[in-house]
Image (cartoon, rainbow, N blue to C red; front, side, top):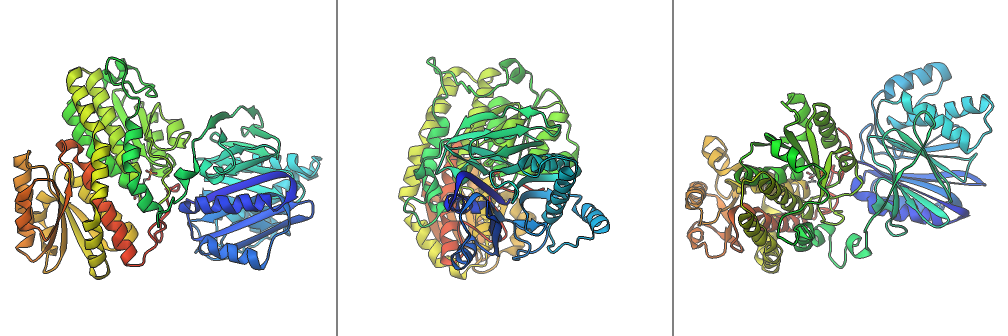
Amino acid sequence: MCGIVGCIAREASRRSEEVVMAGLARLEYRGYDSAGIATVSNAGLDYRKKAGKLANLQEKLEGEPLADATAAIGHTRWATHGSPSDTNSHPHVVDGGALALIHNGIIENASLLMRRIQKDHDIDPVSETDTEVVAHLLALTYHDVCDSGVTPGVDALAEAMRRVMPELQGTFTLLAIHRDCPDAIVAARRSSPLVIGLGDGQNYLGSDALAFSEWTDQCLEIGQDQMVVVTSDSVRVYDTHGNRQTPHEFTVDFSHERTSKGGWATYMEKEIHEQPRAVAETLENRTDEQGYLTLDELRISADVLRQLDKVIIIACGTAAYAGQVARYAIEHWCRIPCEVELAHEFRYRDPVLDQQTLVVAVSQSGETMDTIMAVRHAREQGARVLAIVNTPGSTISRESDAVLLTHAGPEIAVASTKAFTAQVTACYLLGLYLAQVRGNKYIDEIQDYLEKLSQIPDKMQTVLNTSSLVNEVARELGPKTESVIFLGRHVGYPIALEGALKLKEIAYIHAEGFAAGELKHGPIALVDEGQVVVTIVPTPRRPELHRKVISNIQEVRARGAYTIVVAEEGDDAVNEFAEVVFRVPQTPTLYMPLLSAIPLQIFACEVATARGCDVDQPRNLAKSVTVE
Ligand code: M6R
């Protein structure tokens, strides 16, 4: 949560401010409670900050423009400590306007540190944030460093940052500027993301590379507990002992087409429609000339994979539902027990893990703190960790033993759509690879599964091309519906959960997903005249599943429910029990989630629009949940 961006150029101009404001717009998905910017030049340090969306800050800047500057740092906030107010917004400017600091993360010992500063230096906080104390601490330490003989300027600020880092408990990315050194930005990170962008005569800093994607694709990864001094021409990285480090350099692929709305009203709509491509690109180049599945980036040997006796998928939110879908496939194909656990519950359960356990961490951002902590716990217990992530260079990918990348491209809308279907696809590839390596399936069987998987993008396109009924029904129900129940069985169950989550998070409608079989054990009491119930119906080619779900629809209908059904083309048995049927093409049972998720995404998006909600930036949420 919280987006951070910085830019430093050789000459003072509007450039750094413009880059930072553009970067904040791209990072607004990380938090949008308030925003702020600080700039510095030989003429001094200045700042503006404002509660509410970035537009409020833009308006303030129009009324009170900042002077030309060499360096600028900007912040978009998702409030943790203190309400979203002007005062609590970042940057926090201290020491009589000498130093400005922005922060992403949580400082767990903030109160303790603040009490110390209040006692020793008679400084009272003006905000309710955990960040302000770090700004004071940095400024005080800067004076100590200068008093010890170091010339005021960038080296003193870097030394102060180095001394402050070990005093902080919790997580942070910090960016600081000082009026004594208008030619540098000093930054540090622990368990929160920070990427440096390399330009020509100017350099950039960001919570992720998207922040500066318009200007450069050349990036440096900043490691755990490292600090960095960035000038317009140089980047120096240090560990907390002051030893120089060599950062890993990488290139990102952020073509403009992938990061702009491209004519769609919202990023969510655009991303829903990008799913055929996301799945196709995730499947690309995965086989060798003999037709064997090869997952090149999977740096775990076949021997290790053969010895596994358990798979545990850890993830949060939508990514966890992708894991739940994957479990059916992995157990069916590989005959290996597969559990799915919410990452934030995982380590508290004290799970049984050893070297024969494969822990699969699924995450779009690769920065979800709950998942990062679960990955660390799994590795400490000796398990192998495979990351399925959409963001190369992210913390989860760096901290795992192996990585399988989804190629969904940047996902900007808070509600996850294309990342979900790409995650499910990558999990299928993993399942088939395990089945191949462990000998659970013959190669011709694997090829048959792969062939059918390769047909999914076209089938997704069909769902998208024929979705006008979904929009119509959503527009009609949207304004008058306050509760929706989603039902599914087998792989339809996680899709019911995902359909409910989408509606909750963007349309603020109370929605719940249930395993259809669970209905009679309690939830059916909720069903009353007019209750909207959406049911994901399995293929009639699995009659034992199909007929049970049809019975469940009849049960809710008998109690007055308004029934919407997602069913395969040609499944006419559903017609008499449904007010509305959303059709998807026929496909193997295990792959059905890749198709049936789409009408539910479109439904949520259209209902949210009909209710006047902000589809891309729903209230209280942020795209990357980087706090626990
Ligand atoms: O970046 P991640 O995939 O780790 O994020 C996990 C969840 O926070 C995320 O899927 C969240 O549930 C989405 N907003 C759902 O649409």
